Amino acid sequence: MAVSEKRELFNHVIVCGCGIVGQRIVDILKENSVDFVIIEIDPEKAKELKERGYKVIVGDATLSSVLKSASIETAKAIAAVVDNDAKNLFTVLTARDLNKSVFIATRANDDFLREKLSEAGADYVIMPQKSASKEILKELGIK
Amino acid sequence: MESRLQRAEEESIALRTIVTIAIAATVLIAVSILVMSIIFENGYVGTYYSLAVLFDAVGYYPTVSVAFLSQDFYQFFTILVVDGISRIILIGFVVATVIEFAGRVNFKYRLSIITARKLKGHVVVCGYSKFGERLARDLSRTGMEFVIIERERDKVDMLHDIGYTAIDGDFTREVFLNEASVKGAKAVVIDSGSDFEDAVAVITIKRLNKDAKVIVRVNNVASLINIMRAGADQCIIPEILAGEEIGTQILGMGSTA
View 1 (cartoon, rainbow over the protein chains, first blue to last red):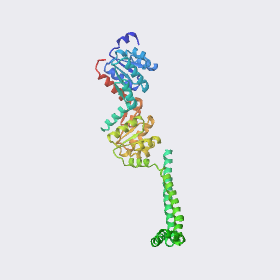
View 2 (view 1 turned 180 degrees about the horizontal axis):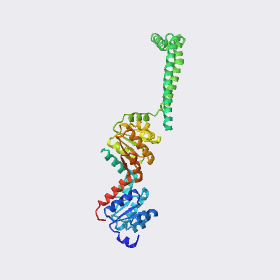
View 3 (view 1 turned 135 degrees about the vertical axis):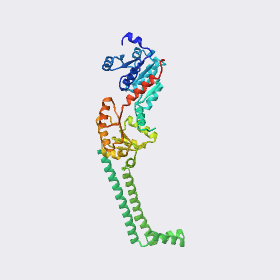
View 4 (view 1 turned 180 degrees about the vertical axis):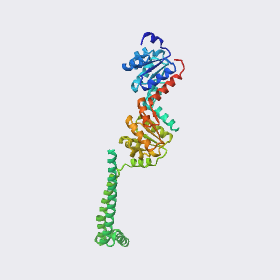
């Protein structure tokens, strides 16, 4: 990402990982004209995202240097949503260390990890399977 | 399918063996009582009565020394040793064999099958993945009746241990769907991890119960299109739902960092 682009990043959202979860977040942010930058570790995917016009940093979001290059210090929120609980945990820890007030959202695959992520500093932890289950109960009219 | 057949066969052999041994033991005991009654005129009760009368008339110690010389004593002793001990051994053998074979009959599994067959207006959960586990927990919490069909026998045994109604089998096959009473189910939720199996399951379920709501958990949009074409009423991609929730949370934050 160019220096000029980096300077523009303020009160933005950092999306770490652009899999299915990350992509949906990006779609919602774009629909609502919210400024964001994507951190993506896969160079091929990163290239594809750049071609679609997104601001992309190629790198590992668990590293301070990478989060700093995404201007974590001035971000309003960060979404650590790769499909790997360990990476998400380290991203949460690093992000919280670099910015005490940034809103951190992440995902977990089970209740035990959800607690740990919250303890690590995440403000909002989503469990995809739990969301899906809730949706099904709602569809079936079960409370 | 094979392990299911093997288990059914083992249970059948175990049950047949228990019944055979019970009948044989009953016949043997009945015959021995009859034989003893014929050989020893007085039998147990008569001989015991004679000795009791003797003790009462003469006293204990003199009776013991006299009893050694009496025919009643030897009759009683013979009955005790030959008939009594042999019966103890026989009964012991029968009990041990019943315990061993009873252990091979999976009562929890049989109870699950019986319970599943009686269900109506319930939910059938096909596949016990992380998603299935979450759904089962939520259904259980709401009091909604449900049955799980899962291929792996170890998982099914574990489900029985935690009190769930579960059947081990292939949910793409009618025989297992029928055991789960899919014809009377309100909804079926499928999570096989394979588009092909999902599609086959959807087609089979819809044939058995066109009114049941069929919901499939899929991994991506391409799968969603295929499964909807197969006849599913709804497809769910948990990750998309998660993305929506996070996106909504972030939007709802306001503009301050």
